Image (cartoon, rainbow, N blue to C red):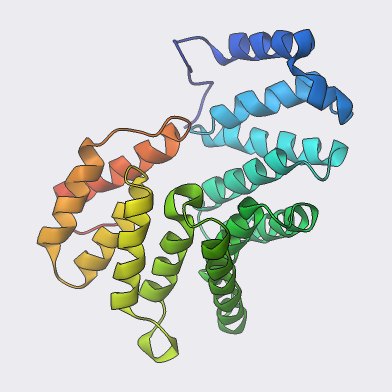
Length: 264
């Protein structure tokens, strides 16, 4: 299905992009990598593959390279957060039970990053995301524990930076409230409140809109769901998040045609 590199930027093949990045790093931009003992070509290749993550085979290679980066610099925040992002990107598009190891690794990486950078919101966010994703595939006792921890981390994130990752804390909390049964704390009203707050903080981060549209769909209010999905389908992409935005837009367009699927 995936048989080569996509193009990036102004149509340059990724191998050209990698060469340009290596030259730039060698010219002075690679001082961080050199200071950390990270091979410059490895850092450049990891970044290039990360940018081509729309192709899941390339994304898998990016995972391997970011793992290798962390062997040279275990405390590197950027490499840790990108590895978490890549793991959830691949895991969310894999078929269970293949996704479970991605989420477990993601939790481990985020926990290590949190120890190294306790004041940064990034590890808190990705730790909560990993816990929430693991809860969807784990056993019931572990799932309940993961949900509890994810909720605590998102509440912490709200005190650290409520705007982080385009309203990420509210988005995850909304998801938790929408998926939990009412007798253990689920609430569509609270989910809607958090989703709307996430949209306010991330108006073009279309996953916020998709989650709220899905909630409306399940409540039988397809008119509200369709209005949100039309915004998603016709909206712009966020620079640096083009693969994710395109995926979410395709989900919205599919629903607008079929009317019965929120498959993402």
